[in-house]
Amino acid sequence: MKFLRAMASGLAVGCALAGTATMVSAQDVTLRYSNWLPAGFGVTEHVIKPWIADVERVTEGRVKVEMLPKPVGTVLGQYDVVADGLADMSLIVPSYTAGRFPVFEGLEQAFIGDDMSKRSPASWKAFETFIQPTGETSEVHVVGVFSSNAAHVATTKKKVQTVADFQGLKLRTPGPAMTAGLENLGAVPVSKPMSEVYELAAGGVIDGGVFPVDVLKSFRLEGVIKQMTLVPGGLGATHMLVAMNKSAWNRISDADRKAILEVSGAAMAERAGAAMHKVDLDERAFATSANIALEDASPELAAAIKEKILPVRQAWIAKAKEAGLPDPAQMLDFLEAQSR
Image (cartoon, rainbow, N blue to C red):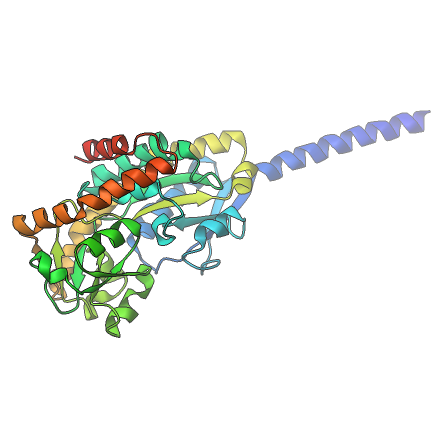
């Protein structure tokens, strides 16, 4: 009898210890981050790495993020990489997979604003208020949404000074909104990620592209891009989301998840916006030093572009409504008001 009581007592202690071990292991989590951006890229240095440091700080080291030396899967497939758990986290560019995120495309419309210290926080608020409720990104846990700098017209040879200058130009485009806009302007859009632009431009496959000034240095484009036409408000802005696999998120304790949320979302968007604004100003100086001509679009050209692109906005409103967003025009109005 004493033996049975002792055995029962030992089992109880063992179970208690096992439960404690489970609790500890549930709190200590290392997340594998699939990194596909080039070394030294502004988003990585000024947004992702500081956020990783914040996560470790606010969780007192219980949650760590390991940035992998190379990406898991393809750049275009990062959403599925995270959703399927092949990596725990990644930076995702929804516009790289045309048609998959129709509501999200609204964040990238032209002429919304080119001051990212305002536009980026506005994008997070719009995501929370309008996009997330549609369930468009429900396969992953979204940590943050923010904007790259506003995109402008970059060319290898021909300078764009009038709408007629767009005619026939083969220009790299990052996503559906800008693709449709370029088509309306008479250009030939080539949908490719930034990582392929140098090779395409050097080989004469494209005549340039639509992207921010700050990618010139990071993607070593100073050897192929000769000038950029800067359009007030931008021809669009590529948006990114930082997403986590849902099971990975659920491995983190409730207290640590709450702490991580405090340094994510709005906080990430504000940090990204301030960083992008500064990077844009710094990289304009680099462009000048690299003999890349930066010229503001004339008021006449800006007005003509806006007129040509208006149908793109109207088409998105119809598409987003069909995809489940009750009032897409309200979202655009919200974005513009918040981005001023």
